[in-house]
Image (cartoon, rainbow, N blue to C red; front, side, top):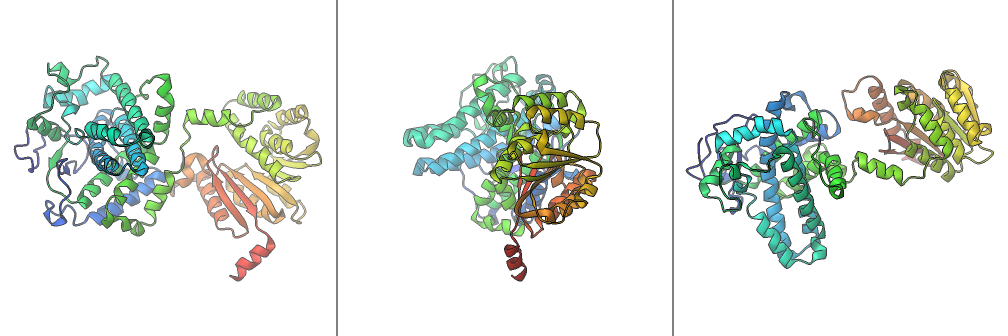
Length: 550
């Protein structure tokens, strides 16, 4: 084991773990960033180029799989060590950001600083979930064994970068109104409860190495003990500039996100058990992982004035990352909440869902109820009478459309088989809307081409074979009246639509999405409901004419 004898000299790393170039250079917590010329070697000379490349990777991974060269070790033991090292190194950078934000909060009592500190605490908490995403047995056999071999009393209490945070929080509580501190207070409580749950999962005995070695917790560590933990986590202390700090943090952020994209946040063990009152907090953090980390990229980039403009050289990477954090990821708990606050299915709709579910795996072709509720509402809002439904299956979408239409409305629904449409017709009769629905069997394109060419359709819904989506679109749109609505389902295709290397149905959906997005005849928005729903409105002829002339 090697300790740091000179606090500004690099440690000699005596244990191998995670990634190439794993040594993290940081200033001591009480030291500010230095001028670039004082950085060791050429750490910041190529910072912009390094960050540009990493932001490009990060943008790609946010919307698709990790590149092969960025994927973490496949071996579970190696991956646990990788997560423990990289996750903690990134946490050290987050602690530095928290420290500066808390100092700003104490100085200004600004609500924005409290909110920023709260979001950084949530990011730190997700990092703790990431580093501790293994079982107690795997942890004992890998990380805990490594730490004990490095020093029998190695303790998280020896982290230099975290030591000042509890005192800064106390100062903030003493100097800021409770109303300003509310988001930060909630985030710190979340962090504490989830940390305790992860620690309880990893160490069921509740005894840290420090306590196991007979030492007392809460005692101020010595410089030598702080050197020990720096050494274990491959941290060197040296004067560095802000560019060098951010470059290193972004690199580790890319490694973490690529790991999660490849294996999931909790691939080696289910999430920790928390008290029922904290379950929603845990679910929200688990469901917003990627958004939290892209938000961290934004924090890092905007913390240095010399790097803010870099986002203009990355193909809009920072814009796409920042915008992602405005969307709330739908966790299972949040989905239940969403469905529970959507108008409930009627008895006939519930029976039809149950009947369809009993069919087995093909039941996934039925649209979920929240999407059906949206179809019904859109039909009412647009007063649609002439409606087309491409893809009948067991009739749930046709039923939703008919329930939203007036008594004289007409839903023409298309399918190629009678295998499941009998179930549909029974449900339509029970709901009292069978007289509004006409089922046409045969290829949908032939059915559409047999329709009059006049633009009379008020609303159309496409949910059938994906390679034909563009053809359906081109047959339907000329027949939709100006101001009419055209909807398409499965436009996210389980997230594969965002993958530029997609094949098969996902590739067909990507082509369709691009086709719609570039079609000047419509206004469009893509909604993250169910498997993705594109909602479009056909423009008026006058608008099209003006656009053509502009």
